[in-house]
Length: 340
Image 1 (cartoon, rainbow, N blue to C red):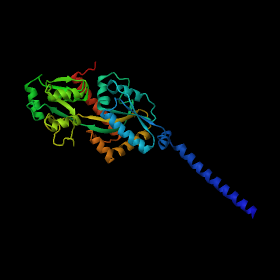
Image 2: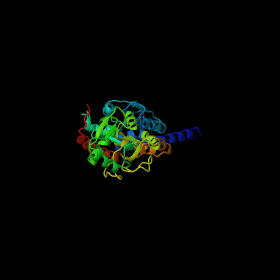
Image 3: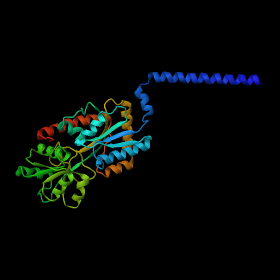
Image 4: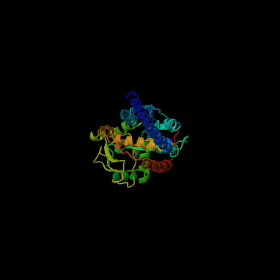
């Protein structure tokens, strides 16, 4: 009986060895046909991810980044670390990102100003279209065209008519030269062929204060800041800057539908990674972002700060970036905007 038992053990061991050898052969064959990028996707992420915010903490872009970082940390089990690199209208943070390894562990969240306006304002040490890979267009944030109630206009058509009667008299404020408010105002002025005066401020807050005091005529302001004053009657909302109406101010028409066809400009943001990041990783990051944007609590939190969720594919975001760079370059050139 002892001899038979040993024989049975030996047979089982031999069978186990054959099974292991067969599995190893299949695995080796599969590995031979699988790309390194594909293998990386199977294990990604294996370490913390750095999400660069090219602005100081506390702003709307930073808030969006922190919400996404928290969600992805929870779902992937790897920490997403926020790194604020403010300065030069976002260019410093973008340069840090573009110099990082294209391994999927460095992301950057940027805005329309940083991505689409800055190439026309600065001599950048990188090419926005060639040196970054688009991942996802996250949100849009419409601006609202507001005027002081003392201005005798109640629509975009009336504002255009008044500006034509009083060339060089009406003023529009902004958070500074090259900022979204400036670009929005210049686009309005150019499309309507008006003679208006730009008044730049150091930020949008003092511009809003001066509009409330009647020192300037109009302002393209974010909906979150402007809406309380509109509801209180301290400002009059004429139109929103986006191509479609916004749920934040559903009764306010767009600039295009209320007298200036073709007008559309808004703040938007999205995620990019260094060019050369494996396509498989870009796809995985995009898919996770889309999933998070669809969660009810995510939608609620972003809506509360005036954002409208998009959630594009990488290809859609890339096409939009090119279109926006070309469109805004024409505005900057026609307005002769310079950054001293």
